[in-house]
Structures are given as C-alpha cells and as structure tokens.
Image (cartoon, rainbow, N blue to C red; front, side):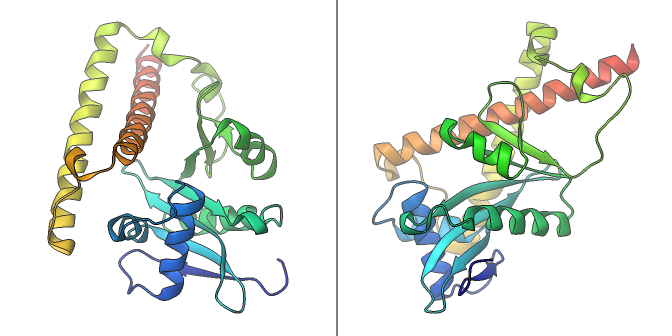
Amino acid sequence: MKAGVSFTEFPPFTPTTGLARASALLIEHEVWGYTNPSEEQLDSVLLRHIIAAHDEAGNVMAAGALAPLDSGEHVITELGTARQHRGEGLGREIVELLEKRAKELGATSVSLYALEGSKSFFSEVVGYTERTKGSSEMVKSFLPAPHGPHSSEMLPDGEEQLSPEKIGELLEEVLEREQRQEELANDFAQGVFGVGLASEEDMHPDEWAAYCGARGQMREMYLQRATRAELQRQREQG
C-alpha cells in the first residue's frame, strides 16, 4: 500500500459524508466524463457500496462501486482513478477490497464491464476472464473450478446451440425480469427521494444514450447467463 493512502468504505444507505460525496464526484468525472454531475447522478452512485482511496487531507485519489445482482453475483459498476494517481496501483487495491467485501456479502463471483484498452489490466493484474469470447463483460468466480462433462469448457457459444424459439423465450424472461427490477427501483426512488426514476424527457441526450447502453449490456449479460443455464439443463437431462 502506498504511504499516506487510506481506504474508506461507504455502504449503501449510510449517511452521506463529504468524503463519500467526493468519491461519487470522482467516479462521475473519471468514469462517465461528467465535470459537473447533478445531485441525482451523485445520489445514484451513493446507493452502491463504495470504497475510496484518499490521502491524509481527504483528497480522493481513486474509488470503486459495487452492487449485488439477483443471481448471487456482484458487479463492479464503476472504477476510477484520478489522472495524477494512475499507475500507482490504487485501482488494483480497490478491486481487491471490493472483491473481499463481495465475498463477505455472500457473492459467488464478481463481474464488470471493461473497455478494450483495460481488458489486459483486469485479466493479467487482477485475474478476470471474458464471460464469453470477445465480450466486454469479465468475471472472476470464487467457486472451485468445475470438472467433468458439464464443466464450463463444454459450453462455448451457447446462443448458437439453442433454437431461435428458445432464445426468444429466454429473452422474454429477461425482459420481464428487467421490468420487475425497474418497478422496484422506481418504488424505492419514490420512497426515498419522493420522485420516480428519470425518463428520457428528464435527461440530456448523452445521459439517456449512456443509460440505454448500460441497460442493454445488462440485458445481454442476463441473456448469456440464461442461455448457459438452459444448455446446462439440457446436457444434464440428455
């Protein structure tokens, strides 16, 4: 650990401190490119489990955020380092701390979405692998490696091995799940903030495009998981 650096955790729903807000601000700036994020954008980050690296003066140097998925997996939704502190190993330490917390919360794996230029960091430095070949989604499992005829090596390119009808059924299930999650999130936002989730009319076009892109990535991830689960079920029955 670099001298003079401390790491502080901010679980969801805890009182917001200046350091927590500074962490959310760094994430919005370094990850999403917003120089002046709105209060709503900062609040959305603060709903996640944040770990921040900061100096003795309270200046945030790097931060990452973690969120649970229904599957028992956790996802690192954001990871950002201030430009002047890149290359100091802070991102790696935050990823390791987020993984440790995910394990303590009962996660069986952690996933994230990596830009093409950062894939080598996640694969070579912190041990993540592509969910499927060429995918931007990367994952690290905390479970022992499977063995035998139903191991993950036997499930390549699953989408090509299912009929279009079955893939359509799985997609419908994914969309239904997405709708239920959005309804729950909207109810939560109404209860906590007194307003529902933002719509296209409430967002800048760039923000809406980013939101739709992230939602599309999550939809793709859920469909890939449902496909693998269906292939596994078919193999076990066959």
